[in-house]
Amino acid sequence: MTPVHFTFSSAFLLGLTGLTFHRTHLLSALLCLEGMMLSLFIALSLWALQLSSISFSASPLLLLAFSACEASAGLALLVATARTHGSDRLQTLNLLQC
Image (cartoon, rainbow, N blue to C red):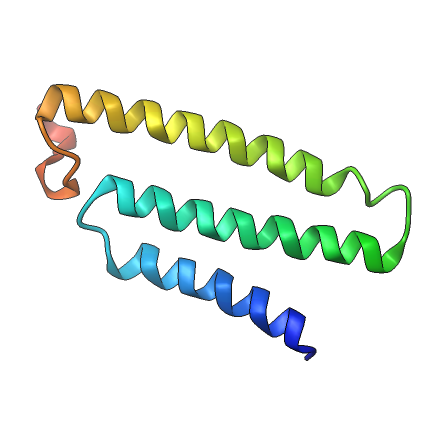
């Protein structure tokens, strides 16, 4: 495994462990998801450059578009949760109280 692959794999795994172990606030979960998507984007971009194929060049842009949609939906949920519950703590959310 090259150092570049190790760096992006470890960045993705750090984001995943942050998402699994630090689930107290919705904002920290969204930041971990964005870190994971950023490492996937850079790794996919480098992979497309290494293959130098035209068919793989659109994949990073598609991933970036989905990442932007995910970020906007996450921020909308964060604002809605903060307005209705007064906090972004995930322990205060209860699906049974809808």
